[in-house]
Length: 410
Image 1 (tube, rainbow, N blue to C red):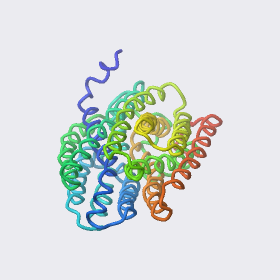
Image 2 (cartoon, rainbow, N blue to C red):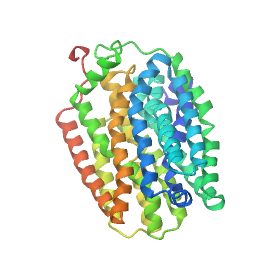
Image 3 (cartoon, rainbow, N blue to C red):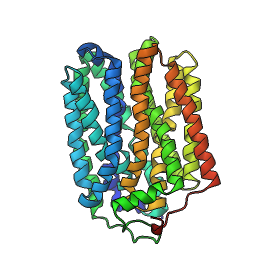
């Protein structure tokens, strides 16, 4: 049966989840555009700004399991709509900031809370429930790919507004874009009407949240995947936060950073679709490890050379292809190992590790830059940890393929 025919009844849900995801991810990936003018204008340091982004990632990571667990009790729609309002409030507070506190609360706490309710773990769980298992990985790749388009719109728009009218107007432009998250969340929330499939013997759907978490952390494949996910977050958030600053230091055209973030967003689409398709056919966890290894090689290649517009855009294309492809692989692996009912929560538990890495990538990169005056040590650490995490992930996935845990294992 053609894929479109299978998906037709749930297309409004999938489109809503994709739009919500593309805006929540695209806007936060583009906040680095405003770092230099914002810090100069209101008199805070680069490390102050990156601390706010780091707190955003911690709030997102540590609240993600809670948001996932709450969807079991209250449904996806209410959680996603509330999260959309948090995003609007966070951007508006950043746009009106006159000091560190407003940047921390708006860009850090409020946007972090919103991402826990609107970003990948929730959107992927919505998509996974809406489609049959036979096409799940492919659909997760499509939703992740569609959800990658936000940076193509938000990064250039933010840079144009920033250069023409100032960073405050740029952030207000982001507020206008974020308004579309509310109707998108309402459409995606229709997934609450779809009943869960009949549980397989190995599923943990009838257990409590505590038992489900205990089973997840008792599964070696999940633990290794969660550890390697730390490196993923560290590398990606280091780039989104610090690449615009790095290019400015190197004397590159400010628009190049927006073009590169847009390039990352565009190739996110191709990478997400490819890895969703690949995850339907090959070992998802081994593919994850391969992504981390190739990413690290690309980071080492780019930062050892003087940046040029051509190499920067090529680097953005490579990293974009390897960026959100992890989304369908992680979501698909969690659904296979633990079933659908607690998928959002368990994926959130893995995501906590990702966000601890994100904290290190954002704030640690800022501290190293302030202390050493360059990003050399920061990218070297990212490359070393990325290679180590990727090799361990691939080796473990091939030596010990994941198996669904039995409820009695708890």
